[in-house]
Image 1: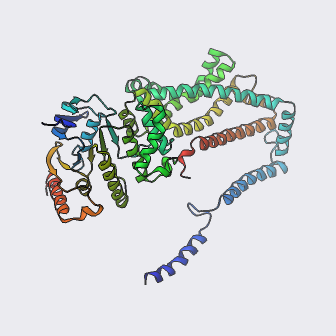
Image 2: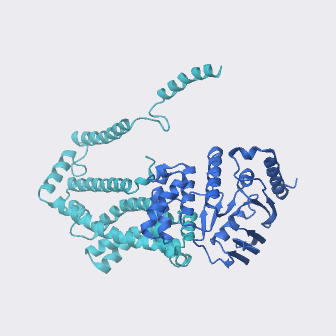
Image 3: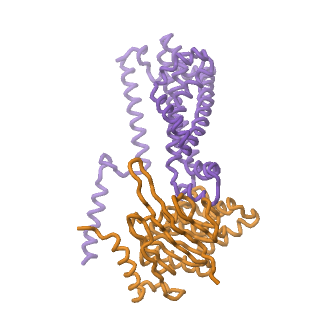
Length: 259
Length: 280
């Protein structure tokens, strides 16, 4: 019996029009993501990976094709898809906990449970002691952890992450990747992760989609066969490095500069 | 080796910074030094005023002595004139400014969020903004005489158009991902505006309010100068008519103090409202 994919994108096309010209951003995208799968989209700047994620989130429209979640076409954004943005999107006038509660309230959660669920999710990202801190008092990594807790709190079927650790320093980024791994393994949910960091993509994902340029398209899908849980230092293993190299090669072929 | 060079470099560094004069660019000195310098500048001006009037360089009708100005203000304070003039002007600026601010904020939300309304309204706002407020004074008198409504109208014309465009800019600066976040929660456009966009822009909106309140003091004074029978501006025209230069100068000083006080109050309130912005 074939199980239905969580997310199915078929023949998706998207172009941007400016006053002078039309640019093809995405061309004939076909992707299927299984339930509880962790996939990454990697590619050079301008390949449309963030645009694709934004379309799946329902925040951008597309010209042609289909985007199905559990077999049903998406109609704009929805609570079944939680998003973690690259830029910090914590509301600055609310504390960490109140930020999570804000999302829960808007998601229509039973008011009696809101405080409990928020506390539990802050605990999940190990920020319980900072529940009453305002975003201005938190580091970049902590802000993104709250953002992850907030996106998970209302139980979306899918977590869409747009270079969530892109603005963090290398050390913090490593810790965030481990934390995300732990959460994903405990909670089992479908994650689509956009990054330009190949090491990050290979470490986290079951499959890595390499995107090509001009027009943006899926160039190749590379499976990451390594067993889980993957230890923190796994990024340095030889087979892992070889796979990273393969992904990098694939990206490089696209961005080769004509000399 | 490296430790040694470090040790040698350090004292030179401190000597350099300690020698830095308070007149150098971006000089670093304590807040008390800052206040001391500010106070000295004020006192210097006052001393100059005392000197010029004290030696009789200028006739009192052109420039009365500080003592004469103070005595006149004291007299006006004692008989209640000052309080009633201040009261009248404060009443007018409060009402005029509130009406302008509320309308400007509503306009700004409309044109900041909806392209249709931006296209429909903003060019008009930009056009009116460049019309000098003083040019409207005769018209406002024609429309509403010398009543309080005329003062409100002048304050409104002077602040609404500027505020609407500045508020719009404040709202436009809210990061697009904030709006995206709200939409992923299934919030309606209106709800995103009211619960995310406007609160996010609030610290900047407050700054705009503070700056435009400063201008409003100019407009209320203008309105009272040309057509009024009460208020600070009106009293200055009376002073001119009866050659009471001390009263005119006293009232101008009062206006300065009122402007400064409202600005400080707005700053203080802003710090209270937006405490969450500070890292402490």
